[in-house]
Length: 100
Image (cartoon, rainbow, N blue to C red; front, side):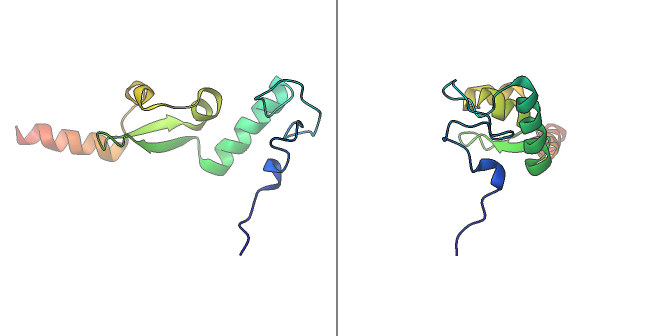
């Protein structure tokens, strides 16, 4: 079975804006303008949610990271501590503090 690929991603790597199909001259970009970039961010937030739960594999702690930051900045494990803990992670830490 062939996996479904959203049509918006069909132009990735072809030198065309994924929103309006305008040729792009800048390497590493997926959109041709700030307007198309914002439309892509909105698409990403609708498809994947405004925030994503990201788990630090070294500590097992989960963080709430904005989808916009993941798209625009990328993400490394060093960045995770800048973001708020997920609600379930906050509860675990609060439960632990109550035990002390």
